Length: 346
Image (cartoon, rainbow, N blue to C red):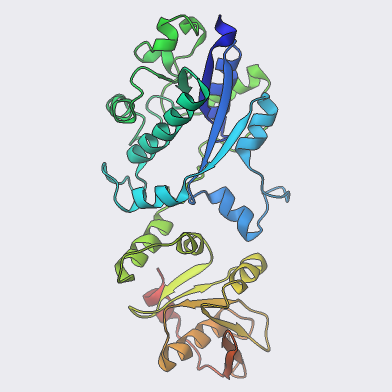
């Protein structure tokens, strides 16, 4: 009977969710995993821009990697359009940055519930640990999330289950509560020891995080965009660009993004059809794109900023090409004062 029970796991590929799937599948439950693409994943952004992992290998999808290691099917679901609407107006507010963690969990669990019902599964598995996340992983928040997602007593959190009220999977004997765990708090040492016992060695650095919304630098950029966007609309392209380069606000109407390395420069080149692009002609340097409609004075500032970040910073002969589609011209910018960078920096 136990082998006929199916459950749906939320699998990020991080250590906690990987352990949760390993524990429950080891109890004879048929586990299928979901991984949601929100548009705010740092790892996915690095892959899109062309970055690599610390060891020089290509960026990978950790959920697919974990699913392959665990022998579990992983369904990838793009929720980015709906998710963006939720992020701009979260019912339960933000954390320390622009992280709507409670609304995020409710949103994902509602999606998981829909999928669970479609495939005939009985309950949901998450890698949540009591007390690990200050906004969404304390008892009151967990209870609220269960209630608003429509999954009361149907969310099994195997890493902390012995510290939480009994769920229906435990009550019905589908899983043995005694074989679940009582981990709590922010330390990852218990999970790392459990991974060692299970023979799990390939996982991302615990507590590294994969969400731009928890990053305070990204939050400043996001708030700046909302403030200066007249119609308050945000596109998928906006979200991608918020995670690339250095950002400077030159005026209410103009913001520029400065590429930090070759991969970002190549990436920013893709936007030359609908943005002004600037690049130094006679020295190595960055690609810069301008959002908005820069006037002549602002184009001169953009050229000066381009020269500042080029190898010709201290030269008076630096030439900067400014281009949008088939329109282009060359500027020789005046030297830029460093104080201006701090004034413009977002």
